[in-house]
Image 1 (cartoon, one colour):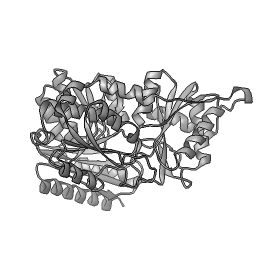
Image 2: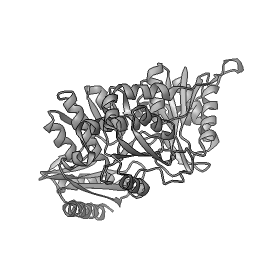
Image 3: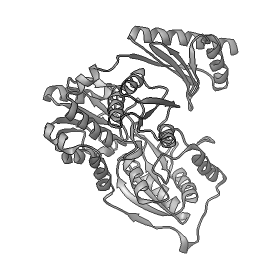
Image 4: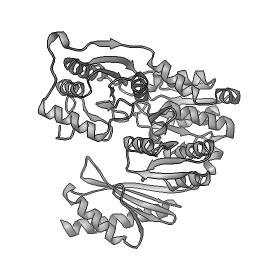
Length: 452
């Protein structure tokens, strides 16, 4: 492990290579030393979940803190439990969409949001200094298993949508749980909403035998086919820990997350007669267009759900989210929430008609995504060169360099974990988006030749 443990979504690694029992124990000690009090812990169904959770819990208890084990649940259930229970914080054992040989340890702040970087740094400092608050035998913490966390969570979700409208619409849905944590919650949610559900990969299995847990179009071929074959109104797919939701419309089309973000953002602004929506600089222009058309405004942030959440809290935003299917509903909680996203989309369809029609009304853009290798020590110089080369265009430097055009943009972001840049381009057509990426990649290559 490097001097920085936490990435954008916790500590992740391959089991018994990067993420060992000893490492998990020591990180648990650091977490317990920092948080103290009562700490909730949950996990997704990965094969290594019990190993990692037991080690982290033992470390936490060694510092005198108590562990409240709420079992195999989605990440947003742990976050809701922490927020609602007024406890010190939480830990989720998950590697989200990563392959099954991975697992991870994700910290949750006392308000239920993902832990901010400055607090993660304090945990890292305790870990590297081995400054653990080891307690004598009669002052160690205890483990308290708790059931019912999903009940309270689903009750909150259901309370925030028009259940009668959803029931009266008599919708048919195909739900793909990806053999992940949503198997414990989303089938129940659809039942409570009166939706007829056909479930795929609905049993929790840590090897993800149905398909990899990242809900990409390639991984959801069974869902796409089943929606078409059954004439379903909607396809719903979660990632491994169910904090994200991707949709398939009633024509069997896979919808990228920016489409669902735009549909829901427009509806939230209309319901609030205006308001601010927060989203990262990587989101499609179509989101800003529909939000403004509905009478709202958009505030952009760096990429990352914790950054979006905290900006939402800071400015009192009515809604937020990322283009990966992670939507944030502040009335429920300030974190990405797969079940809340699914429930809200069902309400929108029940009241406004087929999702395919709503998507076809959105402004149409195409995107091109790629990456280019660049040594870490050159990244800042290369970005500076890029700004100079595009000085005649509108430039946004919130996160990397975003070159803004009248009908789209190109975003160049340095990876925080690898020696490379990610290039995203958006335009009205696929060809234009690709041409913008080609041109930008050429400029980046020129810069690297100059500085190497």
